[in-house]
Length: 189
Image 1 (spheres, rainbow, N blue to C red):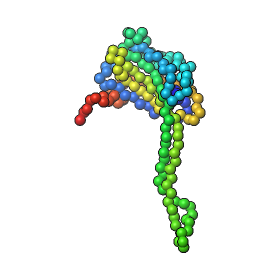
Image 2: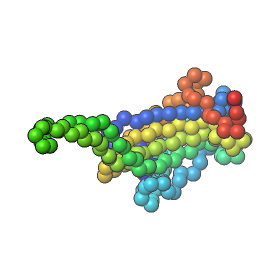
Image 3: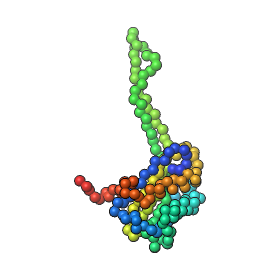
Image 4: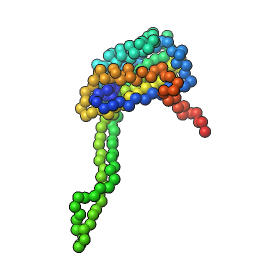
């Protein structure tokens, strides 16, 4: 679920990226993008009840940073939340180990090595906050949090709200904190 990133007790991994050509000091007003009706990897409608609460958290966090909410046509930037649940596969290769007791091959003991590998499946929740420049309609800043989702975990609304606040702690970006967005059409070599 969108908010699966906030469910469970594992530590979240936070990241941000931004377009270094954007003058974030010119951003004074914002509008919220509609909350998605479906979250990839989650049950249909699973985020529906949380949408208004999460939109309020996004709004309140941006207002607390000094931004003013205005109609979409007057905004300097738009902000939206989305999420996804991705199945993950973890493979641990422990190398070779040796049996406790040798077995006999003819008249001498023989030690056989066996590879030790374990495979586990889990879900990873991703909570994403995106900021788009209202004039260019291009992504100017993105912050996201990933977290292992415990099996059968229910969504913890308070943890998701805390995730939104934590992600937005780096917005607007100070020049040295976030990594610039890479322009795939630009070749530096």
